[in-house]
Length: 152
Image 1 (cartoon, helix red, strand yellow):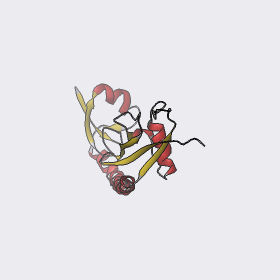
Image 2: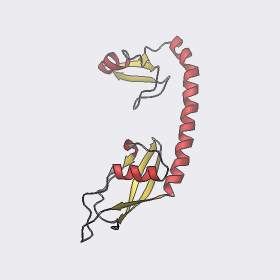
Image 3: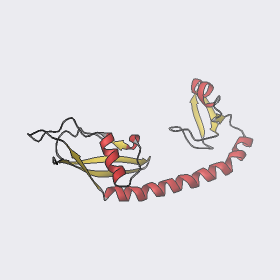
Image 4: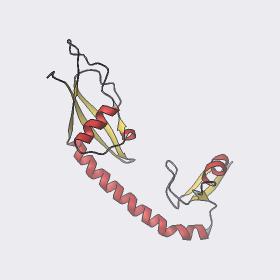
């Protein structure tokens, strides 16, 4: 049996303030209601949340605009990652999310680990495309160039 509620706050994967949602009884009883994230649908609740929802929609618009600007910068940026290799030119290990985060930070991007979408292992020298999810509706791609670190 499902329960209909109105959200008092944003709930990732469910909705934003003021959304009317249908959820399982256990989810409502054990999570949403005790944390005061949602409540029963009523005209009074709807009226109270109108202003809060309007503010949140403006914020979401600004977040989307910012994400689109960052995506445009990311799409034009190459990340150069220098790695140690064996005498045959093979990598010791592979290039991972941490390496990509560090290279992106060096280029002036503040990203979070969960934004990076690596769909292939990077165990060889060369070029790769790495997806970045900046917003649920905005994605970008870094061109990652893995090169040999020359001994000094």
